[in-house]
Image 1 (cartoon, helix red, strand yellow):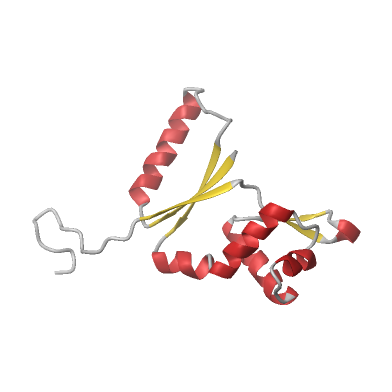
Image 2: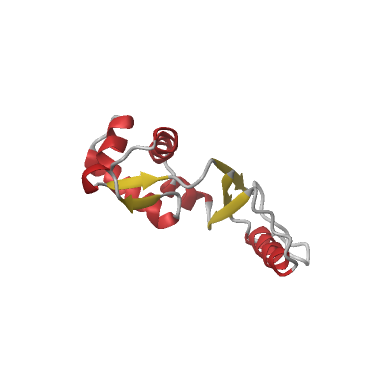
Length: 138
């Protein structure tokens, strides 16, 4: 199973995960049975702008039905082909899916290389305190 982990705003955790991955590679203890890929957004707004409900619906439809073209993907979600084309290009840029040649009649085929998406959102409700105890916004 291949999982896409999406995180928001937790750069320290991403750094620690990357260091753990490198260490596991050096120790030859990587577990290939559950591959994970991490996509990090700098802010919640970046996540919401990139992964709209319509785009997530499109990703799910492609993963479930494996359409052979962008046009077929648009039919699956009952949307205009040009809008779906734009969304597919954006989703490819951020790494959610791949656009591959080889669909029927030479069409570009959208492919979701993940079985699952897991999201972790770090959304502080109050400002963190600096080391001197003063609020970060002060």
